[in-house]
Image (cartoon, rainbow, N blue to C red; front, side, top):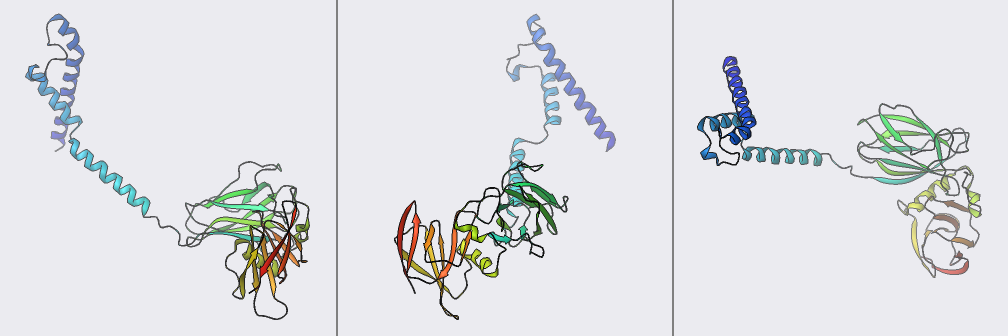
Length: 317
């Protein structure tokens, strides 16, 4: 078997060499009348040269074009199946979390999945972006975190992009915000079933871009009530005792009223406008420009809309 292979290889090399020499000398010899011209039909070329050519072609390209096409189509199909076999997570989330820099605070948790880049966005108590100055990953071999600029204490974008390099595990992430001595410490957890696409981390302090106004009252450690208001930011996963009311005369505003419970019913107003009255008891400014006000239920609300005072009517349930 080995001798036959070597013999075949030798004969193939000899045929290739002979054919190559024939190609190299043919133009010159043709001019001298020793060989036929280059564009001569193949049936007019000497039989010995044609045999050398066929032997060389058979050794160099032993697979016919039909089988090559079949191989390429099967290879493409296998690659498509391999790409489609990666299951998509059953649920993905865009959520928000409140952070206090006081000792004993609960660190936020970012749920990550391989193949998904999770954006972690930081804002201050007024909802304004808080630039990231630097970060440290607990386990760099298992998690990848990117930040486009803003190192060495300089202001940069207010977000990070994180993704895991493994299919299981966790670590912590230490984030230094511009102008803030106390870093934000958070957890990174691999969660294949319910990863975050985006996580908004709102730090209950005033950042370098803090906006003045009534929202500054939210610049205090978050309470249980203010954490509940995060559900109204997304207008999802609201408590069962809360129903939405109809509001008239003002746009970009939604209102919910609580039913049942002790005391006067509470009202939550989700709006991009400034609520002038009645007096509200709590407010939360979200990074997307939305504010959530909590107040006692009222049938009339007063807003400042583009410098105008607008009276809105609420149809209480």
